[in-house]
Amino acid sequence: MSTRLLLRDLHLSHGADEVLGGVDLCLAGGELVGLIGPNGSGKSSLMRACAGLLPCTGKIRIDGIDPREHPVAARARLGHAPDPATLPGALRGRQCLELVAGVRQLGADAIAEAVALAGALGLSPWLEREVAEYSLGTRQKLAVVLALLGTPLLLLLDEVLNGLDPLAAFQLKAILRERVDAGATVLLATHGLDVAERILDRAVLLLDGRIAADWNRAELDRLRASEGGLEAAVVARLRAR
Ligand SMILES: Nc1ncnc2c1ncn2[C@@H]1O[C@H](COP(=O)(O)OP(=O)(O)OP(=O)(O)O)[C@@H](O)[C@H]1O
Image (tube, rainbow, N blue to C red):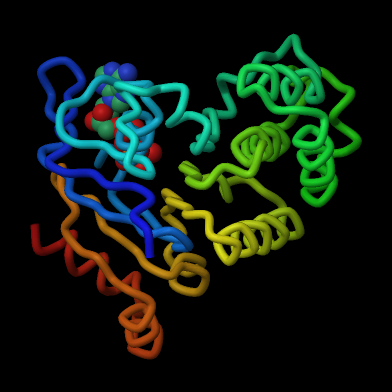
């Protein structure tokens, strides 16, 4: 299986505070991987660094491409859901889709696919309305559709199940599984360990600036069968610090 995302000795600081202190991570094509970690452990920062939005040191490769040297080629392979709070309130949902499609040089087919995805998530009635009128969950749906636009090979999704209604969350999990089965790789930051335990192929724990644990599907199944499951395993790691 090809390496979709490779991180070696990734370091990232916000001012004087080191957030990532040497992250090593290798994701293959066709994996749905959960990124777990306490508040402030650096999950969002890691994703933003991979998307070229934050400076960092160390090795990053997306399908072998360094996003800092070849940002356009890397971005063509990458879908990163924007923070819903940063979506432009004055634009309508459809305009946001068209804007991102334009930046990514995607055509009408990609927009039509995104409109269909929006429908699957219950977003259709909102596409002609301004984002400023959206609820938090509706903004989250639009952020996810923007990330999925153009069927990227690597999806970096930061807590995208948060705030979604049950039907939209169900649909999104099915869409992610379809994308992964078709060869895409998803890195999903989440605090929802019950969901993670059921839907992921793998879960990694980001702790104290590094990957502190890495559970594959068989290990997640074993945890699931044990008392407390993944939650108990994660809580034990956090308490042991
Ligand atoms: N723009 C910024 N300026 C300064 N510090 C920041 C900035 N963004 C994040 N941080 C700090 O970096 C650390 C990691 O934050 P980050 O948002 O990446 O964590 P997270 O794991 O995604 O957290 P959460 O689970 O709460 O979403 C935190 O200590 C946070 O306060």
